[in-house]
Image (cartoon, rainbow, N blue to C red):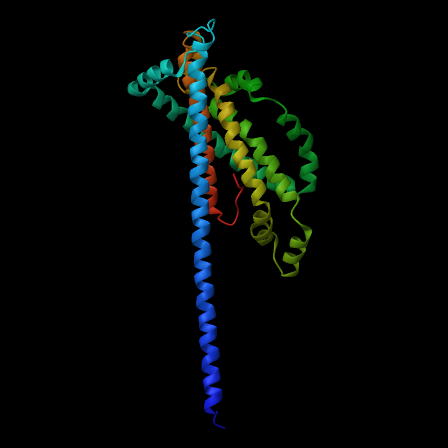
Length: 295
């Protein structure tokens, strides 16, 4: 049965209206995305500007302190104008760059060991109740021992070389990684596990397809905390038996009464901590774009 010209015209009008509505929605969506990107760009510029302003104000207050307070000794509290000259000398001689390289290599090695052992221990204690009960008093007791208390023992066991420093860093970074991984694995919603079992998933499939993705936010938090603690333990590891590194530079400058070099070492540790943390968040956003810590 043939359609009338009126029905054909009505169908054409409806199709045209639908296309116009879709085009209008696309335009609004594109405009929304442009506005969102522009807003994020403005927020980033504002945040960066405030960060720079905060640094400038801090340096200005630091520079003014020895001049405002008459009894302040410039040797004990050198202003940035004095520290910058020393910083230039350390950079030109290559001493600072070499110390940074050595320290970062130690942190990287210790963090890798802590990541492997901490994640594995968290998975096992989080899923095996018997192992959890057996290891709880030992792990939680060891977690309360500061890494600096183990420096003499580490030197006796591993010597004054690199293994003792890497071992101390791995010790400090292990516990936040283990504890966060354990918490994430333990607190996986039971409905997810039952759903996987009802669909025929085995233990290995459940672990990699359900448990690990569900525990991912906790694991990432543990890794982020582990990086920060690794940099903290680095100083304790390099204060004894080291011949290079940022901690070694701080210790020797104390013996030589060079407060300016001590300030440079301390500021370098803070700068490295900030940069490493930012790089971790960027890598996290790249590898896991669906998860964002918001910081």
